Image (tube, rainbow, N blue to C red; front, side, top):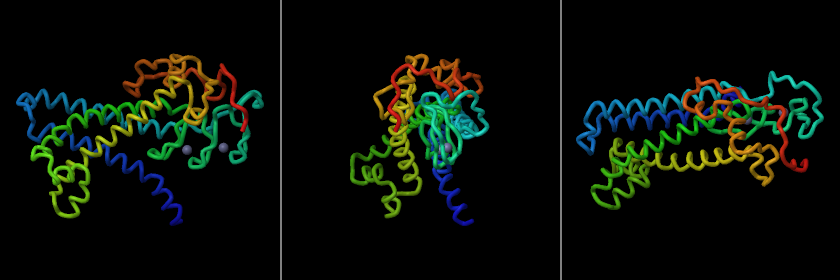
Length: 281
Ligand SMILES: [Zn+2]
Ligand SMILES: [Zn+2]
């Protein structure tokens, strides 16, 4: 009982930490816009502040909305009926789920189920990325990327204020090791919080950039993360068709808002094979 509770806590911890970080960064940037002394006189105008707040909360709303739809949309084979013969190319048998599974489907030992067109198990969400929820995963990444880029630009002011005293040991240590400066009592809690969030924005932006560009590359190539290890692209239909396969028929606009319907062309079960498949392992 205690073991199961600890396991559930462990599984949800990354999501809780991520949520806390996203909301902290938004709160900090809102504080910078509303209350911190702006560098330019034009930034004191309410129209400037209102435009910035709208942009921030649009990005925050898009991140949380896409993340919740991602979590709600199960990519697993539960409730999916496989008709026809399952002995075609790429079909396998999963001994854990005790069923035949279609091509590009694989078993996730964290989710304890087979997942259609499985990409990877996302530790930050505690759920697999697969055929049905790939759109929300990518949109969430896109808005996290744009939100962090925006936060880095807004936090440039924090870096400027910290470095105003010159490149001293104190200012460099505050930027690089804010925790140590706080624990040793060298800075106030407020200075620590600003330096910590500004650092988090830069590191987060670099990480999310790498992740976003990797996944956009995979989408255009018509591969999943599992297939990326191979130079073969047996399911690639050409860049535009590959994007449609992942984002749906309204791929050009659906990422703007999760409400925009965008039906996926495929069913996640059968895939057109356009090149040689990998040898069975
Ligand atoms: Zn399975
Ligand atoms: Zn999983």
